Image 1 (tube, helix red, strand yellow):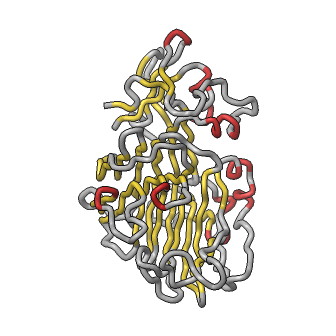
Image 2 (tube, one colour):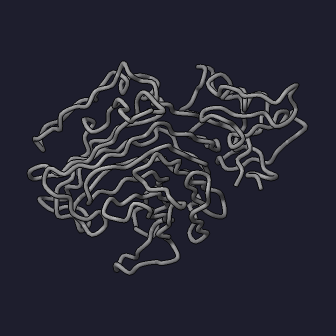
Amino acid sequence: MFWPSRLFHICLYIFYDYRNLGDYAGVPSPVQNASRKAGVTSDYFNSDTWDDSWSIQDWSNRGKGVSLSGDATVLMINSPNNIYIEKNDDEDAASDTSLTMRTMRLLGFQSAAEFDSVSTYHYVSVRMLARVTGSAGACMAIFTYLGGEELADVQEADIEIMTRDPKNRVQYTNQPSFTEDGDDIPKATRNGTLPKGVEWDDWVVHRLDWTPKRSTWYANGQEVARIEYQTPKDPAQIILNAWSDSGSWSGNMSLNGAAYMQIQWIDMVYNVTKDNEEKRSFDGRGLEADPGQHGGLVQRDDSKGACKIVCSIDEADEAGETKILSKSTASHMLDMRYWTRKMVVFGIMLWVSI
């Protein structure tokens, strides 16, 4: 089965590669003072490559006065100091570096990490090659997010790794998973099991396919959960975070404990929204496509030359590449860095198997 089947405009693809950034590698010392503002950890995070796609966060969970949000019992502060490029010291390492997100319990507060996409997306297949290590009491996540004034208005599809859980368990959710009264909504969430022999401190390809009717989750290509209940409907950001607030969800992290999410790459096939069209310009001249008045999937129009080339990222041998399936002189691999925009301009269809 392929997605989409009759609709055309899951048409953009981008690959964020953190495997060969040795010039920027270095592990910063934790910021010990809760009031100190930290800068980014290397020039990579000031580059257009980063800033065109992602925004590092520095907000805290401090509410009005001295109160904390939710049921948190510890002040949590997001810091750019906790997002850095790190040398991969694995034996027979498959990459030179990875992007690391750190959360650490310090005296009086929890230091955390978050970065958000600059743009919004209306349906997406997002994958990352990542692993989680370190102390119990942290939540490591990648998710789509659209906030709301009321809890019931939140739209969110989550992959969450809880470091206090068994290493083969991952939480998959179409939020909200509880009501304003604190009652659970079982239909909204699954406590999934990774494929046999796989644990989240291994390098795992975590994947979320957010489509109009459901959210479906995979680990190393194997489906591990699907939820149709309250599937998000509106354009949303992609967010990654590493955090703890010693509340009921994350659990408590011991003083000087730390947990890490290391990411080799992030891979996204996504639809175009008006926001994408305004914010993204892959070659400085903008996208030559009509994504529709409000974004969303656009009906395929073969009269305009759409789908002259059909490609797949699932049939490719290497991450960051695609394979031409039809309408080509030969079946071969393409490096996506050189043709992301052409996928729209020349009507290339990208298929994602589900």
